[in-house]
Length: 223
Length: 223
DNA sequence: GACCGGCTAGAGTATATACTCTAATAATAG
DNA sequence: CTATTATTAGAGTATATACTCTAGCCGGTC
Image (cartoon, rainbow over all chains, first blue to last red; front, side, top):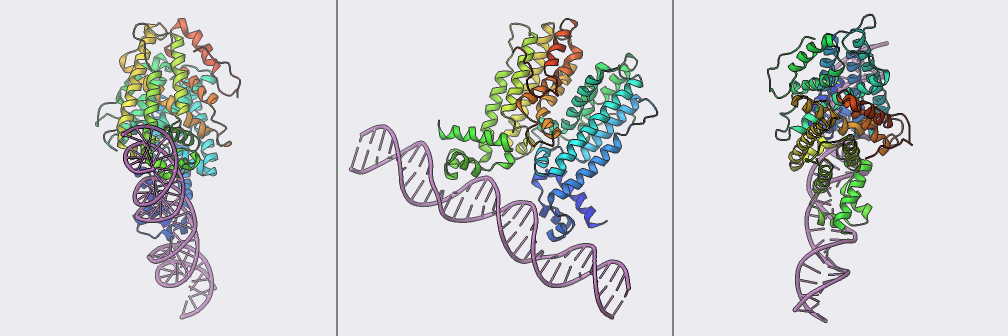
């Protein structure tokens, strides 16, 4: 693999593990057993590394949120979106941690992230529309869709931060990929009132599968 | 005013303005026109300053979330809780910004914050119960109350971060106390399905008053 | 007036961190 | 093989930051 790509992978890994603030360019170089000079040959500065990783993240999420426009959406679609999005969130989890600082210090990132957020929110609204068309959700006014999408966005993007803060005793143990998926439980809780009678029972059952407080061994839904 | 208190006030101010990460102890001292030595006479280190500010925050929110146990809760109560909580959030807004880093580097804070979160969540559940008793909300199962409280917590504590990231063009302009209160709109959106028929109209009207996209000049509800 | 304890100044330090510079080495093209 | 370009090493630097240390001041009390 190219050195440049190795730098990106290792950086992502270390950022995820320790938080961007605790990872220096020298750490990254040392972890790869390359020289700082080498690292700076491939990236002008630390921000450039982060920006590149963000672009990857953006592309990943963008691919996850693609919407088939030829057909309405099913319940399976919805669960697949949720699973995918939380997966992306997990793989790039450092981004949402020091996000404000990162946006403060990198204008590109700030503007880009703003647009990314808007694209995601719009995609979510369109997903809601698709689910309405598919008879999964009851019809919602445009304003309501927007507000709902925003609430889902807030819950989704901050679920991990919550896990970290809520489990103060064990330093990292509280945050596993399994627990992360329990964020789906929270999202389904929020959507439940808008599920049609036809699908209510199915959604309640799905939701049960993500219920918190069962460490490990949760059955996984179809996707 | 005592130097110690001035240090706390100035620190809070600078932290809120620039973010904890961008404020050094030397900055704080310089801003107060005192020597670093003086600052370190009053506080052993930067963490101690932050911890003390957190304790203030905790006390403030604790006082906000007190629940009258002799009577059920009214719609006014609910709005007052929301207004108060967002007010506290605004005044100590730096805390939720670099929270993860702060909790990572200060064990006291980590344990204390975990308990604080739990207390808040429990208080919110009790508020829901009170509102059910007051006929504002329809009865909810305990599990649902818990999940709802958690969703509200997530939206409330991360609303500001969202504002900051969503308004990428103007660096700080996007985040005013007024805009912050629009978080109330989001919370009411989430609660709406559980409002009783009796109060639905009133809640919808209140919610309208916090609707986003009207810069400045929003009429305020009673509290 | 001497003394004492709380308070303050301000120079100074150890460490970290992002980043640079030069020279050497590998890869590649002619 | 040679020339050129891409890559890498590694020592080094400028700056920042949290924090220390010593000496002095100031207000009150005996």
